[in-house]
Length: 215
Image (cartoon, rainbow, N blue to C red; front, top):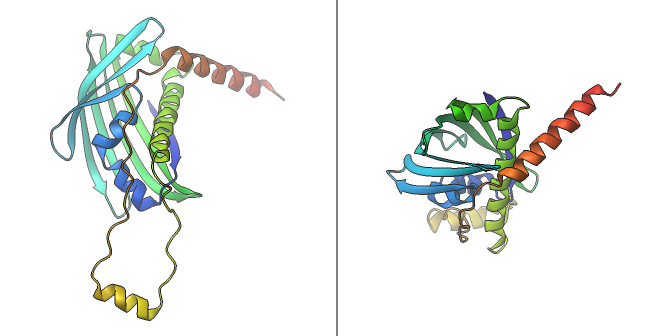
């Protein structure tokens, strides 16, 4: 199944890109996720826990970052994981890009997800997987913003044009440093709130159903 999500961050695109490329830093912002090993700059090992009512699922696997284009600020992520109790597996490829938005940047994500085994049953019916993914991305964005709130405000306004004299002085002084990305504390890993997610998913589906019946 394929679906799209997006979220905003109060950072200029260059700063948002630097932040999202720092996988060890942002991994704890994903609800229920834990980074267990940094293999190299593109490959990681980790696990994610999801609780759906009385059922607790724990996936462990690999994450690979590839097709990274710094100029266009686009990249792709491939994740493969298996449930610890052998109830199935999940394979996902997500392509994301960053574009300017009011007040900072917008991160757009296109995900192609495949579930197998017993866990695939959770994706049937009323589009639970798509709606749950939207809730998880929303929590992820909230955690990122909470990180940024712990630091002094970061300017997202483009610098004013310099005079020719100032430009020459800056040129003689050497290359300008890259904009600093704040380094707040990472939040503690918390399991995904399955019951609240399910309640919101079904409510969204009920609203959509009755909205579609209006004439």
